Image (cartoon, rainbow, N blue to C red; front, side):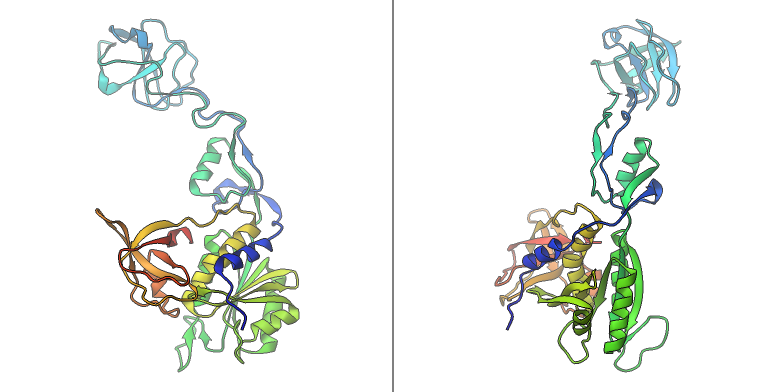
Length: 402
């Protein structure tokens, strides 16, 4: 019997095969959420471009703050700067407005009293107070974001602050998704007959692919038939950068995916030391990468997140670090050590004395999709491990996976 492959080794082998990147294209910044930068982004300007006020108040020389000062000008945000502040005077200034040359501090209006266009300041004033210096955020020539960055909303804002409206990105991967099984029925098309199931995996995988900023190529349901399976796999490979299937990768008489992928290309069928899940196929249909996930809904979610997701991100050109884990206290027990790395679905709570606590979802069956829909994290139980309530464990937040 072939030994089960550890998760870390399987992931290492999968990632080693993720070579090349999609073509580069220019994309409107407003549309670039989730896209991956194809080059370093270097600032051509300083942000802010000139010193500006962090407060509504009065701009002045700190050395003049001990005496009443005539208010010699009023400066609103957006007004042209550059007018010199006369010595021994102050300027009424508003948040974001350019600090006039000659001023070296801004005093917030709550610490000022203005009467008859003369302002008196209370409290100490130091040079630089409440002033955002030129280039405080970004210096000209600075590398602001690096190639391989998967753009987040805050990244889009940062690039916009540099005056950019378009960015060079890798074309989003086209990921073909298909589900195998005569028992599957599309939601909304027909009432279920005995032995049938609604195809939830199609929707889970569609959401996971789109959450990565990639383009879904939906290939629907494939019946349990060798010829139909071969046709569907070949068509999917021709239309996409990667093919992902659910179901049909084991060795049962109605599991046709393995044989047809081997006929069309090559296949490494790994039985992973992972729970939920175990059968996972990885190979190529022609030159197109192929990942065959198990059929059980929770196994689909977990194996996609742990194996397919990092592979797709690397293939997309993204610099994707390993998933961070955090520590929590197990509020459950594991009495029998397993031979596979177990990813238990848990909910997290915070206790003043004990910190973060992990509570196991009651039903851990690989067919219970609600265990991932109603949980916060995956708790990692290494092979050969038992747990007592109160033991410390590592968990992966589900929000980091979608």
